[in-house]
Image (cartoon, rainbow, N blue to C red; front, side, top):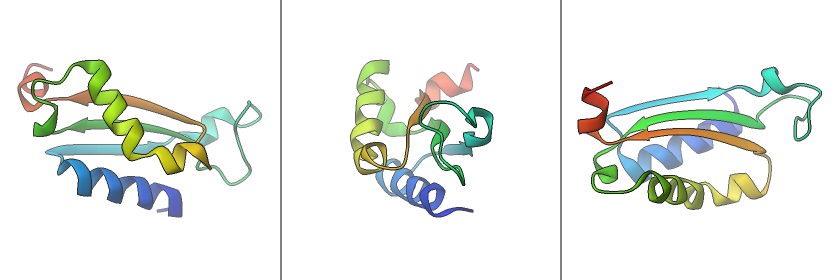
Length: 93
């Protein structure tokens, strides 16, 4: 586990107490592209299910997570793909 990965995972866990959280560092898929840095930790994918998302629009969920990770997005993280669901939506997947 890398430093930025651990920070993101901890922030999401502490803020959302997710029922499901998958965090993937996909930086290796973007080598040579804009925003990619040697050593990775620039491109992440998040799949999270949290009760906090009940009643929130997709856009509000994304805004909330982006605000939670604002420091990382202002620095080392170039891209963040989000799949955010409430428990009832996750059951229908």
